[in-house]
Image (cartoon, rainbow, N blue to C red; front, side, top):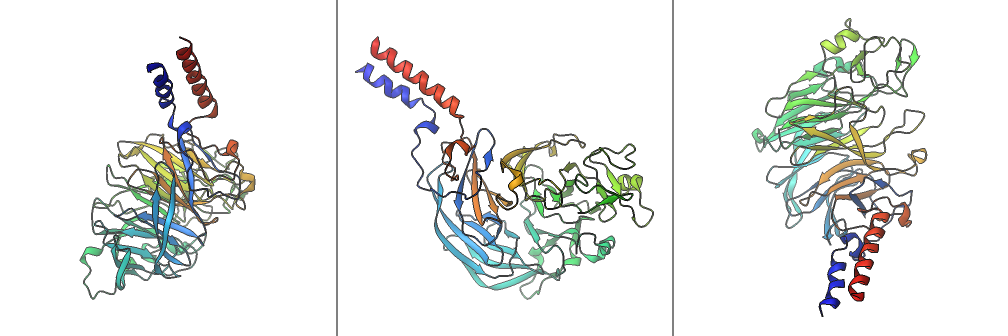
Length: 464
């Protein structure tokens, strides 16, 4: 009897990747299957959106997604463990075609905040019944301008009642942002807990300045471990230096630190006068500048030069690859890792970005040096960037669920993905070619090796 049970015990020791049942979710992508880092798995969970951008989970595990040009969508998820999830119900919670990116929840989860290009709106929210109450209430107003129209929202968890709103520039080089009262290229914070019931909203320029001189800092996050506020900056296009074209490899995108929601730094980060060095090769008049340092544009005003860019303005904590368009940043609960979505380039000869990457942190700061060029490590990537942007996913919003799985939207393909580190799911929702899926927890060689060992054990048991 013992001999007959031992093989089953041996089989029980197989990695769950081998024995896991097939997932009922069989959605696939119609472009080359994304590649995922070792130890991770991913799956396509939902598709058919118009342009999904920001997303967040409510208190009952519902997924709220801003579908730009449509409104705010609620997804009820069927969770079969690991990355085996699917959508069991889809509800248009707020039908408003002007909603385009930002979404946040109050600290207690009973109010939803969403943004148009001009306003931050709020509704009462019941996550159990999946309903909003009453009419919308304006929290922040008068943000309309051309150029960059997304208004990222961050509700501080360390300082409940404080809402941060990021507003980008009016065009590529917006000289009006040299004046702080322009209200553009800034992140400001608002104590919305002080708003009276009859208030018609706070003027954007009446908010507290968290940071300015920020061309278009679409991704804004709070480190749960320290309360530190971080943003990822989308820098300028078509740049020249001293008459030479440097736009392919400069300037770098940026990871910037802004203090805390309680005590924001309120400093100037240099735009539109100063930008960040990425590649030093063939950089005109490089001098002692290195990656991560700031440099002045040719026609900088007010006697700004390379030296004053590094003394009078705040340089980034890290430079990031040029034109990769970071659009979101999210921290793990312990603050050890920040994940960044890179939407992808349009302004360089060879495509770059089109990925989700991780940045290691320790004691509230990145572990990489300021001049590092490899701080952002690939997590989920498009395998052939030459096919981007037409045949690629383009990540935008990021969110963690209660099981610490990382979710992301791809606006260009109308899709939502989930990623998990470890676990027991292997189906990726790929394009159908398992060998190209690149998202197994165990490499095929490892699985084959384990199977071989188990078969040998079984043979020995029966022959003994």
